[in-house]
Image (tube, rainbow, N blue to C red):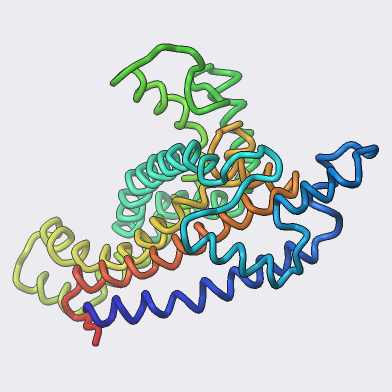
Length: 320
């Protein structure tokens, strides 16, 4: 296992290098000057030249890339063109909020999707199954921005149950448990928006896995021994059917950092996703590079975690 993990970690290095080269090239090919929108049209030429020198934009593209890569490896993500502060400081303010949003969304997903998937598989081709299947297809096809606006209208405007902007109450003075509950109150709607598509996906996945496990020989053997249907379901069907979910869980862990770009923008949620959109709009390339690279690394590590967890929960999986 140690050799496998080491091999996989080493294998991610070329992937990260390739991603960074492609991303840097695309940003270089983007039209316009990243500083153009931040300078007055009558700005002094010497001032512009000094500013480009400070940000390293006066160097050739290849030299810029190696300068950026050297700093990135050392944990220095550069300085934001737009806000003139260290990129790591910008990220540290927002990354916790995005991770919190992702975790709450995953909790909603598992709490709702797994029971519904099991229920649907226990009564296949029934009215309940058809209803849940139809709901899943609607969830799949519903754009996240539409789901977010719908939840805002219903639970924000009409019912007034949840706030629909920000991540906490400004100047509330809340501390401890009160502060946590306030954060949770603000994250409910964006987390549910994120969860809708995941619930639809997991519901279908669990249903298919349970139906497949029910058709296996070990399930028929358990029934032939006279075990009750509930015991067969609990000890034999679910035990095997839910193992593949570990893979999805590991991948979801990797995606936590990426947040939900559209969802955070709709809800005015000050997370990494909102910062990403703002940085693309203002051509804040150091921030765009940092967020994209961190997200890519998180996804690669999430996939590795999924493989490791799969080996732990299923002894049949062996990594040489």
